[in-house]
Length: 300
Length: 94
Image (cartoon, rainbow over the protein chains, first blue to last red):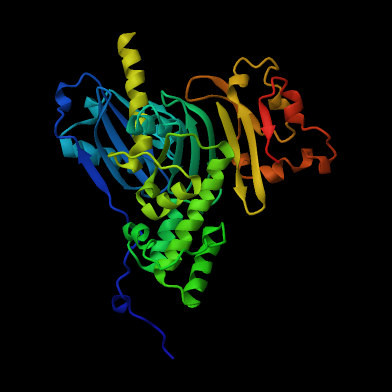
């Protein structure tokens, strides 16, 4: 029997995991009148962000998918936001690289770890009352304590497996064939609470989710079970360093209410709100570090 | 700053905690660097420009195996890194 299938007869592959890329500029500000312009570039394992800070204030950002080459991802992220406001690389006084690919940002003046940058970014986004930060990144998860200036006092990171990370959520999104932005709201559209998926490994969790579907669970119930598992996993990470009031969540998963609400319920505290995109916290912190360093340089 | 290096997996929690405030101007001369039979520690300049010790990145994901020889089952009654660190900056979670 000839089992050959022509490529053009295959159904189109939809990328349900694909999250919204975003470019934003604060139109109320004019960078041309600024004294110091700094940039933070966060090259993560899944997403890359470039943030522009003018005179210590957030001016614009670009958040996009990381490609297979860190230097190109950094360049593309920065080019996207510069194109939006007509800026050139020569106009930027100081560039700080952070994230997984921080040492591969070709035009960076300094590389700073994402732990320090997320703390600094969260301090800007949530105010000086932020004390505990949960960064739910693409392929790792971090619990951070900081002081009122955004300086790290305690941190813990788990980058050994993808459970409890954005990548894990992308896998479930594709498996369920539901756009990733809809997972959170749909996880509440269930008639009764469900138990968390028991596996801590995202590969086994995927198998378990398939088993639940076969057992008659609705897609929404499976998503709820996965969101609950993710919440329980990151809460156990947070409990290792303790949770202090002034709780702030950064990273892409902060946009998923299905996980955030469950974390809040497990911890018994509400996460602080922000109007700024939670995904740019690391790059924003890097740009703010750049502003401090450039200010010192200018004053010297 | 308390820096926790390690991971949690299905078999347990494996973290080495380093109190970097005790690491700065270490009175033991960073003796942990040579005390560890696996040479897992190294001195770096951190994000706040302090000279501190950390656990090398590759070891952070294999601590349960890397430290096994120094645990009681390996014949040690006290961990070489913790014994060498007289300021008491190093702790193991397991």
